[in-house]
Image (cartoon, rainbow, N blue to C red; front, side, top):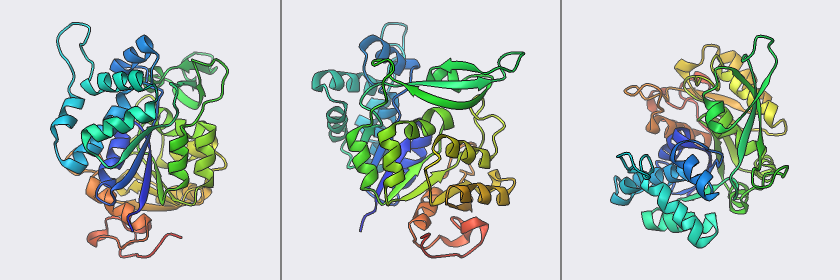
Length: 336
């Protein structure tokens, strides 16, 4: 049976997960953050009041490339206009999605039309049907050590301070509670395996846990829940974070969440015992493997990551130790 996989995230981190998942299953749903306020997405969001389309476009194009090879429509979707006029910097796919959002009036319908245009079987959904704003508590910005509130994804991602925790705001409904995309909730509840990470921890991964409906679905789902850790800390957001600190922050933002597997690159973990302890706090077991791309610094190797996904689903690990549990060779069998 083809496993039903749901990957939550945004940007390049989600791209890494989707590329690996295409090697394992054809039944993939990407649930994407909708808090971007920079670049082309930020401009369209401010001018039209729509969902920021950039991360949604990236997920669609990634699935199209992984499923159909370098298709023309995927290339067109990713193409950015040059020059110095009004279109400068806009990706074609962002404009297409913005048009679909306005014509259809429903972001889920619009994204389903876009996936048909691109010829992909996977599905891309927003984590919320409304644009959201990230608000973070940041220390290290003042001499007195008092925390400051920083608003906006771009500002948080580039802060020289230390992000302590985040919250989500609904700018179109001041004081409102973020609403989850119904289809995204259904996908999580019906999944066989759900992935969080890798990606910008505070602006791409954790926001999913702060949408109440999506958080509840992640807690309730019977799916195998997998966290994929980043290869290196991200300057600004997680500078100085150890792998286990990433899990601590996850637990602080969603104390009720339990996961089954934590995947980390072996060379990125300086203290495996501490990571195993931190994973155990979330109910998980750590899987240490060589998942970094040996040829491109800072990127995951999709084949190695796919091998870890297979093991998380209880399948035989590949030869040579890629995908072995806790760094031990030749282990097999289901996680639970």
